Length: 126
Image 1: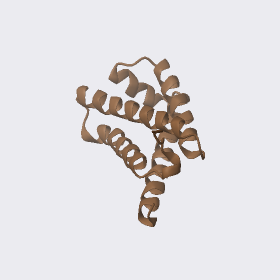
Image 2: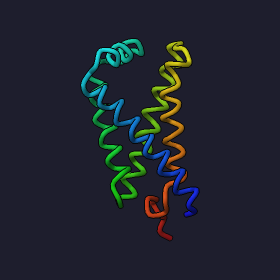
Image 3: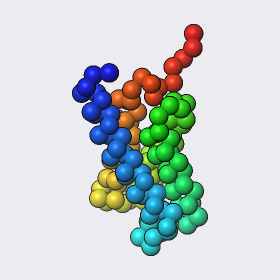
Image 4: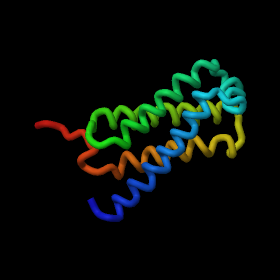
């Protein structure tokens, strides 16, 4: 892995982790603005706790060394959650300022996954 790719990986991964962790805390704490967002999108309030806990566990899985299969699942979970959020905002007719955070976290997830080091990848056995 080149130094450039390692820098790209860590910048994207740390920003993604920070974004996921901060939104997870807001969801787990059921802050009013987040509850209003979820209600506006048509989701029940308890959904925030589920998503928030999954995000926290996903951040831990991605940041700790080893466990490449667990990391793949965490990346997949982040992709599903953020693409679902993106589509939910678009379908609800939200303005770009409401759509952008989901798009940003989805993009950071993809960049982090793409540039992850070899020791963080699941290698196929032939």
